[in-house]
Length: 81
Length: 423
Image (cartoon, rainbow over all chains, first blue to last red; front, top):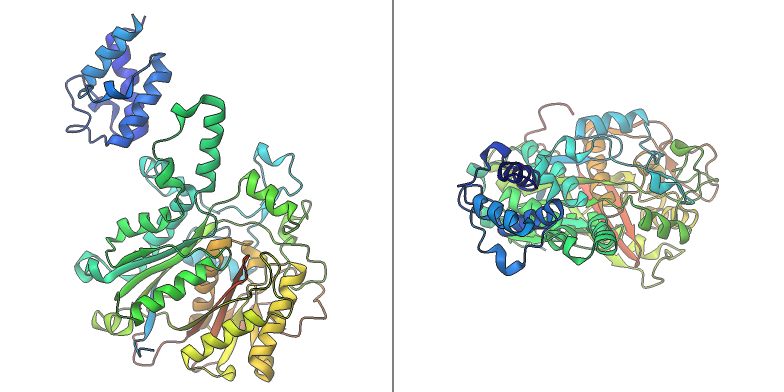
């Protein structure tokens, strides 16, 4: 089972790949939209890449609840356990 | 017809012989072919395994994240438009967005995005289809991307007429300025269809050269042994501007985009009218619109794709239009080096035409080892000089569907500031 930090780090790599945000900026308290400037279409790409990476399903109606990196990491951790 | 004159003030391109205008012009004059054997694994089972891919990969030029949000055709368009816009000297301070337009053509559109996402759909399911697939694959994607880049608000258009698309975009840009809809229009064409499906389809319609063993000799317009065109990719972009607008800012003027002629064959969906009458009417209309006589024309950059039928039909059309004056016209086909860029062909070849007028030099047609006796034209089999004084030239583009578009360019007015730096 991946640690919280491992999930954050892998998610940061995905956000970097998709949106060009420096991976170091992708910290738990950051908002995808307000802080990292990840637009809605890029967010869909992040979600799909995260599903594949972490082996979880993130339903479309759940995505709007994932405002921050921490929200996403927590969701992924819960789904994995 | 309004008397507004339209001038060319910026050029940009990325294509199989060069990643910019200067490199491209040098390569064309040197007779350098951009055709090569395809090294992709997917090419292995194809009957045609040669193509003319861009000399400089767009990902070497564009920001990584920007590139991944653009179809390859849009990448080429943005690369070329960035160059042309910088070359024109236009900037936010000198342009009014509501007076800036775009006419950026593509023959096929975002075909690699479409097919790549279809592969994902098949192998990984619908969830993996990119949320960006639609803006990437839509044929107006390149025009819209260029429009965003230059903040164009006068109208952003995508003419689609197969291999005549690039020239049709130039014709539309001229119209937009003459009708007073814009002061500046970024025009051109782009294509990125070097992919097994279009390659197989063109090969199966017997359109492509099968000279897999000698790629640089495969595109051989007017040679008796020509056996089809070579698929190319890339983009060409020209900045068109009203003469008044260009003069007001002291812009460098490459040439005058003096007139355009657009006709349709109404003969066959794929075959050219064997007499070339639609092509001849397009050239005649371009001359009339530009107020030129056949004797004013000293150079034609022909469509001449290296197909058995098309090259002859066009040569007849040139003869029919220019009559005896055709004897003094130096004709070339730069496709012998660049391959056929489909929807970008007219744009790239208009750039070559403009540069030929400016430098008074015509790039050669390579590979004409044994000229087809049915071609009664003065072919530039070596680089050729053009005379001093006022010059006019035509660039022809014809497309599947029977589309014919000829553009007439002339050397700048004596009153226009000549282009400064040599390129």
